Length: 311
Image 1 (cartoon, one colour):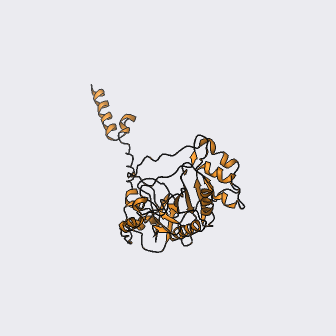
Image 2 (tube, rainbow, N blue to C red; image 1 turned 30 degrees about the vertical axis):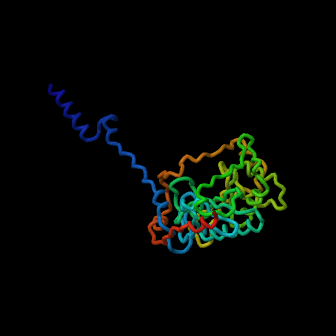
Image 3 (spheres, rainbow, N blue to C red; image 1 turned 90 degrees about the vertical axis):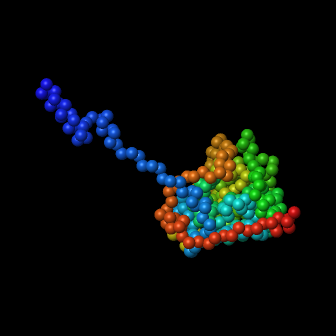
């Protein structure tokens, strides 16, 4: 009886000291830390650009921008669509590029270009949609050229024309010389480092007879991008914290590179329907101050006069 009692006391001491077997020890494991709180909504709710010199900070899919500017809703050769999204901001270099692009489009007699999503007032992650477009150097330009100048309200409900036949993995009959020239003009500016297009569109551009094919190197095949092209500028001067992408491969990308994409081309369906999808993005430390900084509030513009004039 004495021996059994002594064994029981020893076991109790071991358990109390945390020296028991695996079953008991498991109860003392540290809990996994909770995932970080989403930060995309906060970036989409800022009232205007952060004051200070224009700087792109971080990478295209994890960064922010100070001193951003808003692209005017209308200009020579272009009009901004879906302005209610508040995604018509960018680094001044992007604003200058898009204005110049519009003038080139008008001079070529192509019609009026439709400028889609650019970036938010201070960049950062968006509440839905794009993973990139965060440092004020990205812009979507739609490929359709059939709309004359319209009021801003009328431009809210536009839909893309898809120029890719996914069954044949080729461009559709709607693709024309006008779309090809639009892409060429977009790529002609040396500030552009990449233009993401559907692989079928890249193939069509490769098969076109161009006197100078150097710009084709900038056209990068990517899924989706069948109704618009995604323009990306390189890091501008005065942005030491901007993270450029690595250089694209040599050559025009029209051989094995584009062919390697054609076996896996599929349509991309947006599932968000414009509804916020909170997510967390690991931002550069400098962006915390950008989000909290003093800024400029951009007033809403009454579009009723423009609408009446264009009816």
